[in-house]
Amino acid sequence: MRRMLAVAAAGMLAAQSTSAAGPAIGDKLTPFALKNYDGATVDLKSFAGKKAVVLMFISTQCPVSNGYNDRMAALARDYAAKGVAIVGLDANREETPDEIAAHARQHGFSFPVLKDVNNVEADRFDAQVTPETYVYDATWTLRYHGRIDDDRRGDNVKSQDLRNAVDAVLGGTDVPVKETKAFGCTIKRVAK
Amino acid sequence: MTSLLLAAALVAGTLDGAGVRATVAERKGRPVLLSLWATWCVPCVKEFPELARIARERPRLAVLSVSMDDPQDRAAVEKFVAEQRPPFPVYVKSPGPDEAFINGVDPEWSGALPALLVFDAKGRRAALLQGEKTRAEIEKALEGLE
Image 1: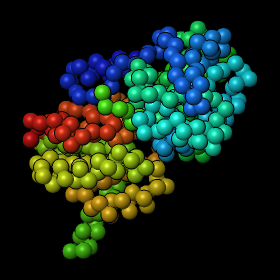
Image 2 (image 1 turned 45 degrees about the vertical axis):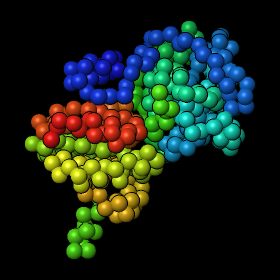
Image 3 (image 1 turned 90 degrees about the horizontal axis):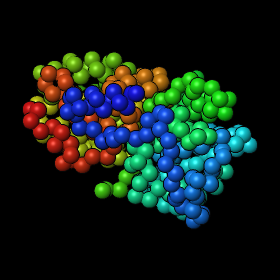
Image 4 (image 1 turned 60 degrees about the horizontal axis):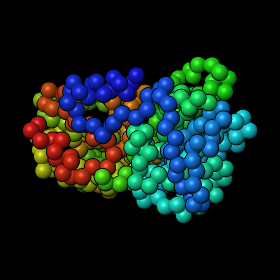
């Protein structure tokens, strides 16, 4: 809804904006396949049957994204056994698969981090920053989009937005807050 | 003279979202270029000297800058500002949730950094530039406003 309002406002004010239309809450996920940092192709279709799929646009270099490394690793640890697939995506043009692999190992990521070459998926999702997350339920319907939580340092978190959304999906209840604004570094895209 | 230069290089203060809007409104009568950035944001740091050049070349344009650095990182902002000596005031986001600040500044801003908001002389937002921008793209957003 916020995105729709924003688009309407942009039209009225003829503002210049880089925003395009990404998926709205309730939209279905269009599966894609990308290479993991180890070279193996990961097809989202392989996650059919999972209770939830969490997509996270992340970065190896962005300090805000890096501030969430431990929380992202913990998220994967806490939810893997509950039938949730966690998938990282790195769309930053200067971050190579080797760099992504070293970063993932250094921070104990048990989830794949897919290299989004030429930011194709970042464009399709209209993802702007890292970290920015999307939660899909078992029917691959978008149930949450936005930040991981409300404190980039992690020492004063008051709202666990991503975990709340996943918990709601797993519990079959309405996601309490469906959209938040992700804050972080812009995804460094290739010129198109 | 040295003390004046040092004073000009200091952080001007802290602002919340409403404070940013009010500070922009105070410049009504002139076009405003509002820069939102952080010391940890590489493209922001790269862009900053370009904004200083634009400000020096366009005396009619009011340039404002607000850092999104955490309050704990205020020293880093002050050091950067002291080194750069920009010809415009630099504020720091006041403590509080990022989302409230972002929406307070402009609900259409995604929160991405760097971000530039351009306002015309009547205080109406004329452009929102999010992410890395070239000098040409910034100049284009300022066209016809002075």
